Length: 590
Image (cartoon, rainbow, N blue to C red):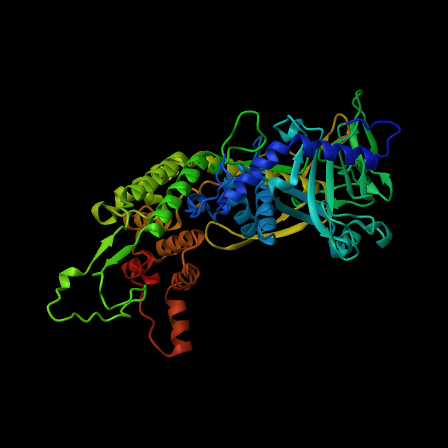
């Protein structure tokens, strides 16, 4: 993107930001309308009157789809080799470790609702330096209402620029961007007067420079907070650093090392030597990930569930308002003789009618004008069923099936599976977005993580293992040219076997069925039971870890039993394989 000559950089980006906001006015209004509908808006389209009763089916349908599962990373090498497979495993453990450090459960909660309400969510992945000089990845799930892409483009990869909008304080921009309090005083909040101590609006622009590199410009009001051309380039002071020239050998995880002097083959077959130059990896893409609900033609975000069921929500609001009006207008009017010696009011049991001699109780009565709203109720339920069918969910999926006692458990599970199948595309879009986040996590560490990151994990047998992520392991040497290149050829996806595609209880039952069927080995063998409980632990079964430790110790045989006898003084009973099946079935948790 070329910046106009003779125009200050602040004026250029500020005008570009205002233009982007203006061009996206229609989309911003639609997002606002969807959010209001989700919160139970009582406005009626095309009318100045408001609904007197709101049955918020939008909230109910959206919330029934919210999933707490965070897709787990799966990384494979684009071209297989034993070494590259080991590196892929290190990258996978790195992504898991970063996920554990960040509040992904909270961000997933936001992401789910943003996606269904707005049609998509926006993720911003950044690298930040932390105390001690050890940097790390910072991930944030941003509301689409605070993201302003380049108009008319529906792919981040095709954009020349885009904007984020954040609200913060003057003190925070001083800390984060290193500006003086005098500069921070010039910051402003959109739509409000500025003042010391008030929050301000920070606008962040990612754009492509003339060489296609990613740049960043940050401003607030008249204050320029950051102007980074070549934002992802490594710098030494104010100078660009293209390559690292080590002064001593750099150890690799394999046991080898990158030496300060590199030998290479000349065209004539002789050996040449040059100082080693390790090129710094530079990210060439915006650090932004879009998760779509369901794909839509020529649209950056996907299709919103709120927009699809809005006609049904509006109609239900009208019907429910009519039901309330009918019930409020209905009444029971008493009938009394003209010369009755009583006064009538609305109190309950506040009167005693005393009949005069010769007077009949039949002279007293009532007129019931309570309306029949049964057809209105049926119409509201019909509209509700329409909305659920549009989105693709059922009563069984929501846990509200009234015919639970009339169908078998297998049939009920089949109904849930069929509903889940209709929602499959949404899960696939979520998995794709998380795979892109994992890729950015890897690229950031490939660019800036100079220190080795030691990571630990549980292997297939439940044993703790160590693995190291060393960005120098990804350098490849070309002996003919005598140069190093960086290997970033890895494929990122979601691990579909980690419970994200199946309910945990169903996974527990499947593991138990495999144990009974003998597919894990002899059910009477403590080693088989150890394997079973390790699988349950990976599926997050309650107290499975305790069972793993129990069978691990029991599997050592008589030596462990004698040790336990000496410690407790009591005889340790042998392990009975079938005695744990009831616990494995989940009965112990109810």
